[in-house]
Length: 381
Image (cartoon, rainbow, N blue to C red; front, side, top):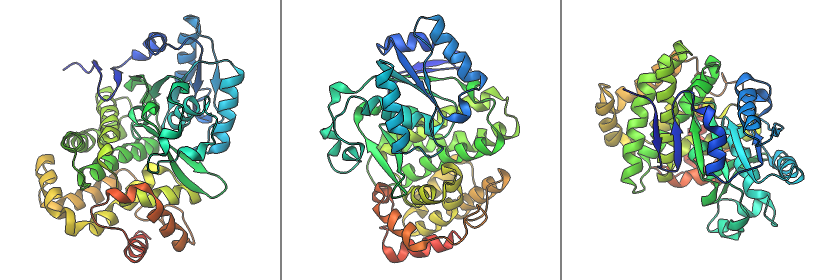
């Protein structure tokens, strides 16, 4: 079976090994003539980034890069990126990297033409309508990890560095015009990043699948995304050069992010404030919280998770699925709890407050309250 394809759901996706060579054509399709490549510091000098810049330069599109992006990008990174975009006279963004590079790149393309401050566009009600949609620059997204799925997302997660809160900035035009999913770009990922990002994709699929909102297309995509992670994440972890496993994990990441249009839940509601305050890796934090959240939601999801277990070839229904999650985490070196993740003296009051104000709470199958969220968080320690 060929693992090369062209898709237009949820946006135009060029999928397949070696397709980074089409980056200049992708920019042309997005009507970008002076792109700014935005990525994180760790990727700035790596071969895959240099090769991408070479392709852009050879096509006469310049060689501009902005890499002042933190692992949990914040409004300072955004302001610096907007300044680089404006001063360089750019007309579009190549968002390149994992979740941080992709989220910051999309945000710069959005914010560079706006006159209102960033926090005016938080994902609250219809705040996105405040934006001047015509001033949003086009985006080409190139993921280099297989986890967040931000390349097919309509939002960016940005940390408010003053309040240490993660905020979701949303607009429909955050969705990139063209995406290049080249699994060869993920071959060099370290094992712990392969594990953490892969389990981020799994968390997206699990939470979207369990969300009570109605969205049958997302439901099916979430279920198949879980299967791909189950089958191929262990292979990608064991052998980073397994291009088939890398390709299927890249698909699972995009599927998870597309599926969570249906909703997320308590896993993300907890991991967002934890990551903002303690600077933990997002996907790994999701994986640590998942077992406790499954038990928390058990009264509402026993039947539906049992159906998923049957599809995934897991025996034992809900309990069998939970055992599988525990075994998968252990096999990928995931800490058993937040304490083992390195968080000491967790500020429970602050994290609970952050979780309850996070938009992800709205998709959890069981209503999250101050009391039960506190108990849930304590069970993660």
